[in-house]
Amino acid sequence: MQINSIDLLIKSPWISIKGTKYKPKMVLTLSIEENELPKFCIIEHIILYDSKYVMYKCLELDTILFDEHLVSYEVKVVNSNQFVYHHMLPFFIPNNINILLDGCKYVTVRSSI
Image 1: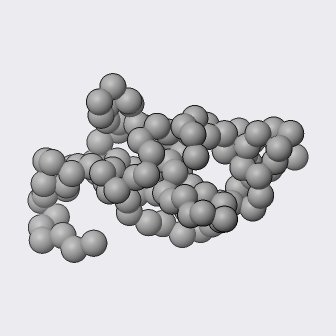
Image 2: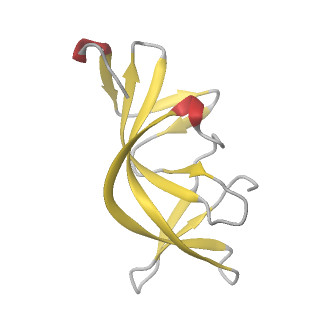
C-alpha cells in the first residue's frame, strides 16, 4: 500500500457501509481458497483514505481447523498486522468470534462460504 500524504488518513471509531456497521474487534473474512481453510482477521482500527476508501488495520488470525460440533473455525491470533481495503473483501458481513473457557477462539461465519 502506498499513501502520498498522512493528511489523507482519518481514523474512525466505527463506520456503516450499506447498512452494515463495522467496529474494532469484529472479524472479517480475508480469503477463501478451494481445499483450504478460510483466512480471517480482527479489526483493530478503521481508516478512511482520501475520503473515499475504507481500510482496516487488522490483526491476523491463523485458522487451525473446522469444528463440526461447534460449526465454527478454531483460530489463534498471529502477532501480525495487515491493512485491508473494504472493497477487496470476499464477503462484507462481519463474523462472530467466541472465546471458550479453555481460551480457544472460534469464528462463526455469518455468510455462506
